[in-house]
Image (cartoon, rainbow, N blue to C red; front, side, top):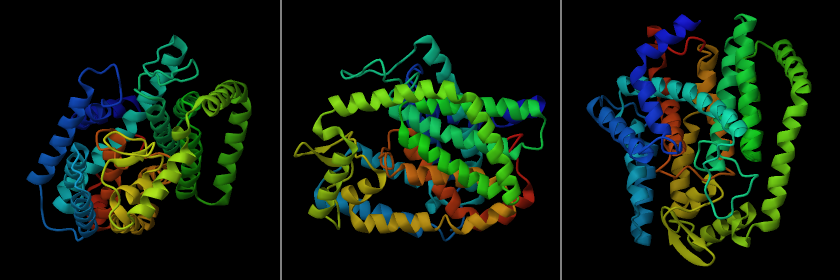
Length: 402
């Protein structure tokens, strides 16, 4: 197992470096993290253009999305740098520059990211015990914890992604020794605890739903599901006291926020503002990276409160329809999970992103890794039916336990 692991790392060191650079935008101790993220975007874009092949037939919804976003920008006369970064991301990861080489590049980078993210998540256990907290805000309290991440929201989202990836690894390695399974279960418990201490109820809840979806995709029937349920029940009862301590902190944090938060900061208020923006301009939205904050139209870094609502409120219903076409094109690949169980990881993470985006607005946050990761994932799954047979025949490398 260890020998296979190091062999995998050695053969995929380029993807490990790219993953590290991509995640650096939200990991505070990494110097020049934002610049490294932009360099990763540039590398992906250049690689995609250089390796462009014949059309896969999956590019049209992405082209329509970009056309409608640009149309919205012209109607509103808003051209923020985040718009151009987003266009850069879509051109780099989408089927617009399609080829089998680009498809496999995305697959290997995604797998490496879903390997690296749990490592970063679990590191924050040490940070919590050592009192390391990089979250900086005038409203910060002792209950706010982000570890080595720049914000508790980013830590919660990362831990949720980690939970799904680790659960997948446990399910895929159920035939391995108890030492391996025990180690993976321990890492999952650590990652779940990070979700709790980050105070992100939505990330924790959605990751549990996504883990259940992975269980469904990988199960051999009701018997195997019940077996896993019993094991989960036993582990949960043994670790309950530790998690209750973290849950108490989460409850206190939420109560503290409810008491002190200004009117414009609650999620329900953010949602109501997005609805008002949709009513004001349903067809083209109010502009990319734009929202009303306390009655004033603001362009730049904003908290939308919902990724899906922000797609409509910022860029209009036409763009939303194009995005829904992209999401729908991810569905046909689901039937291929039966033939290649490794795909359960990608669909489990897609489930997480899809549901979590109702509560967090990172679909358009082009300066941070979740945006790039999401659009790379949906682009890969859009092209999956096109390149699956060739990919399966080649038996390309993946994680040793994947």
